[in-house]
Image 1 (cartoon, rainbow, N blue to C red):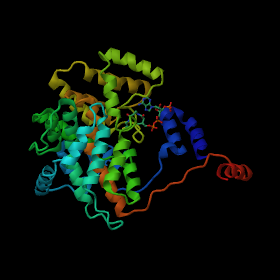
Image 2: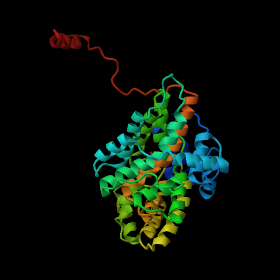
Image 3: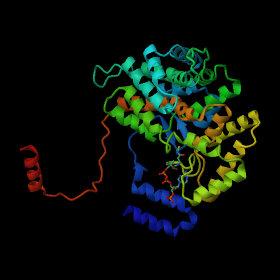
Image 4: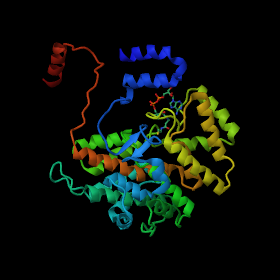
Length: 409
Ligand code: COA
C-alpha cells in the first residue's frame, strides 16, 4: 500500500525526479534485497549520510585518503581512534612481525592449481589459518584472542595471495619478509620481486583506505550473521570472502577490467556500451545499492588512475574509462562506483586482473573484523523472518500415510 501510494505521488512530481530515482525508491520501499531496511546498529561508518558521502568513525574518507596511511585507518576501524605516531609505529612493527606463513599453510597453497580463482585461494588460506591458529572460543561468548587473530590475518593475507600466485605461476617460493613497512608496498614487492616506487606505494595505500569499510554491505552482513551465532572469527571472515567474490559485489573491479580492455579507443567504447545498454546488459563498475548520485570513492581513485595513466604514457585505457563514465551518465544517469577506476589504476601498476578482488579482501578485512567485534560486543543472533509464498496448509495425511507404509513396512 505504501509502495502504491508512493508511486502515485511520484507520478505527480515526475518532472522533478528521474525515473530511475523514482523506481529505486519504489524498490526500496518494496523491500527487495532488504534495501532501505535497518538491520542493526554500527558506530563504524556512515554511507551516503554525511561528509563527502562516506565516513569511518566520523572521519571523511576523503580526508583519510589524503592524509593517512592504510595502517592508521585499520587502527582507527579496529580500535576506535586514530593512533598517535608512537602507536602507529608500534602497530606497523607488530604487523611486520606477523607476515610469515606457517609451513602447513604453504603446503596447502602449493597444492592449489594455477587456474584456481585467487578469491578461492584466499578463502581456503583463511580457513586453513583458522585450523592452525584457532581463535580461543573455549568460553562461550568470550573472545580473548580476537584482536590477535585479526592482526595476524591483516599481516599475512598479502603473503597468502602472493605465495600462491608466485608459486603456481612462476614456480617461485617467495620470501614473505620484504622489510617494507606498509602493507601496500609489501604486497607489490612480493608480487613483482622488487620494491615498488613511491607513486605505486601511495596508490596502494589510497586504494586500501577506500576499500576498508562500507557499513552493512553484503559481505560485512555475512560476517555479522556468522558472528551472531558466536562462531569463530576465521569462519566469519571466510564467509565474507565468499560473498565478496560475486560480480555484483567485489568482483566488479575484475569484470570492469575485462570489459574496458576489449575497447580499442573511446569511440569504440561508446559504440559497444550503447549496444550493451540496448541489450539491457549490466555494466560492471556502475551503480550502487545505497548511493544515488555518485560514489565518493570514485573521484579519489579516478584522480590516481589519471596520474598513473600519465606515468605509463597510456593513451587508450584512461580515455576509454572516461568515455564509459560519460556514456553511462548521459544514457542511464548511472555513475561509476569505487570499482570502475580501480580497474585501470591496478592495470597501470601491472597487477594481474585476477588479483584485483583479493586486494579488496586485504583491505575490507578491517571493516569485516570491526563489525564482527561490534556484533559480539552487543549480540543477539540474527534471524529475520520470511513472507511465505508457498501453498496453503494442505491435508495429505492419507497419501503420506500410504507412502510411509509402502516404503517402510
Ligand atoms: N548497468 C546497467 N544498468 C544498471 C546497472 C549497471 N551497472 N546498475 C543498475 N542498473 C539499472 C538496473 O538494471 C535497474 O534498471 P530497471 O529498474 O530498469 O530494472 C536500475 O538501474 C536499478 O538497479 P538495481 O539493480 O535495482 O540496483 P540494485 O540496488 O539492486 O543493485 C548494484 C546495485 C550495485 C548491484 C547494481 O548497480 C549492479 O549490478 N552494478 C554492477 C555491479 C557492480 O558494479 N557492483 C559493485 C557495487 S560497489
